[in-house]
Structure formats: structure tokens, C-alpha cells
Image (cartoon, rainbow, N blue to C red; front, top):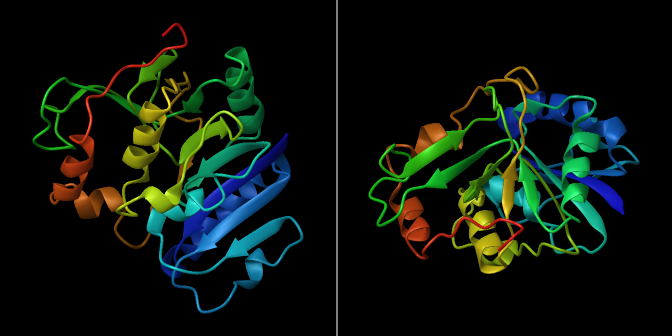
Length: 231
């Protein structure tokens, strides 16, 4: 199985994106970077192991550009994080424990039942597990954090062409996993496991936390089930 790390970025975040790539470079068979709104390929990404893509602005969802490839352990990474040296081995070991029939992440949410009036509100979220905070035990969730996730592409099929919006890949990936009845496991870790590099521009959360109409539309499009391997 090929191990790939897949990221999307923009010109204003190039400096921290380079740090993200550097942190996973030695763990990857291939690193892929979707370049939103770049006029040319940055010299930092001209490398035999790094493959770059330019095209339609896919925002954060560009990291899923190759997710329908076969025979890959497909890691989605965020451009504002640095990943530890054992990250690949840790994530794959947990996938293997469940015969790769799940997806794993370090971030996720368990949703409350019923209509969700505000996606980012505590009225919507029953439990939240943050990638930059202590998570004391492995936990099954409805919605994963896509930028700290991994799955086997022979078992999980994520099609970015089915996304209506490109700024909520956490929800869309989780929605497609719901449709495939794929359990999502947030893995235990300590708060210092990842390193966060704050970007110079607003994050997607900062942009949409007060304007989540589209998020509500998609999150309310189905009745969410908490899938586990026993289901």
C-alpha cells in the first residue's frame, strides 16, 4: 500500500505549508499539494517526492483531489500543522486493528439528535475532541477533523466532485462515510502531539463560525448515526 500525504494551501500560507510538508516528508511515499490560486509552482515544492496540482479553487477540499485512487493509505493534512515522527505508524496501526474498515482522526464531534440550528454551537455538539487538546481514550464520532485523518482508499471512497461547497470538507467527508457506513475513530493523544502554526490570514473556522448557513444545510441533510465496527 502506498502512503500518501495530501494537503491544500494558498499563497498567503506558503511559509507554514512548507513546515507541514517537511514534518511528513520522511514518512511519505508521496506528498501531494493542491495549490489554490498559485500562479506558479513554488520552488519549495519542486521535489521528486512532492506532486503539485493547480486548477479550480477547491479551498481546503483540495486535499481530497486524489482520494479515489486505489491502494493507498490516504492521509489528509492541514497546512497549519506540523506532524510528529510516529504519526504515520500510529494512524495506520489503528486502521489495521479494525482491518482498515474504519477511518481515523485526531479530531471529531459527536452530534446531538434533531435539527441543528447552529453548526458550531454547543447545542449541536454533544461531545467534541480537539486535535490540539488531550484526548484520553479512543472515541467513535459522527464528524471527523479531515486535516488530521487517514483511511484506506480501497475501503473508503471519498469523491470531492460531489461536494457542493469546498470550505467544509470535515462535514462532506463524514457525510460520505455515513452513506458508506464507515465508522470514524478519534484516537487518543496528548495536547502536544501536533504543533500548530497560526496563519497570517483567517482560518476557515474564523470565517464561518458566525455565518454557518451552508454548514447547517449539509449537516441537516441526513439523520446521523454513530457507526461502530459492530454495526
